[in-house]
Image (cartoon, rainbow, N blue to C red):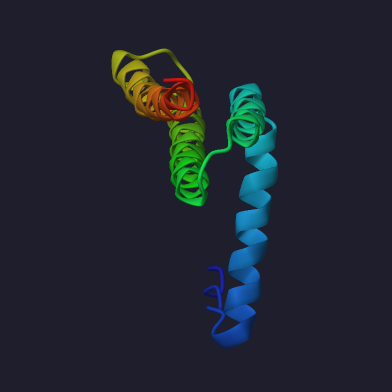
Length: 125
């Protein structure tokens, strides 16, 4: 027989369910070495910002860029997992999908590095 439809949660139970799903995603992302490297780089940037006396706005801008990078890293990981599940054999289309996701993350890594470098260097100029 068919499965019963999944009951949609509403109200406060939906909020708790969504938070649980997000926490599971964060735990999954922590399993990625690239993400752990990005976390370390963010920590280093925050220490450097403290050393050079960055403004509140500069901290906020760096945090927003970092959150964007985390979001892109999560989406890239999701793309990789879907491609691996749907197409376990190596295919050109699967390779392109993974490469494009990786490039999106790379662009945000560069944006984070350039901004952090600008903030730190501007304090010495």
